[in-house]
Image 1 (tube, one colour):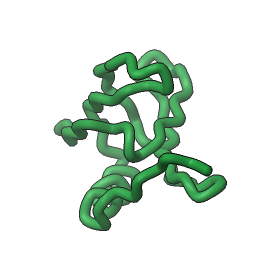
Image 2: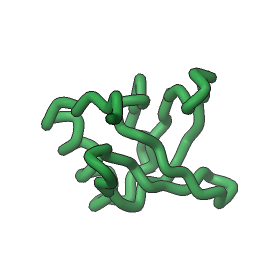
Image 3: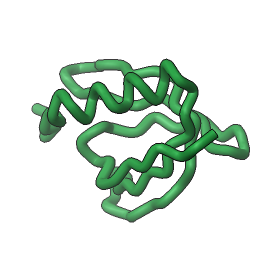
Length: 80
């Protein structure tokens, strides 16, 4: 059983808009071990697996990211 907690629809919609407009996002999140991270990413897709939702993105250096939505603590859209 997952401990995933669904995020508000408004926040999900913001991620969808960022993907459609190819907006970069500055994210603050916690990984599986609870370690905090801050990084700017280019979001590419949203996906659901086993009842959990994820943001699929790439960091500015091209590294792939797959972030569980309920672990994202802050998201700021950046001007192109």
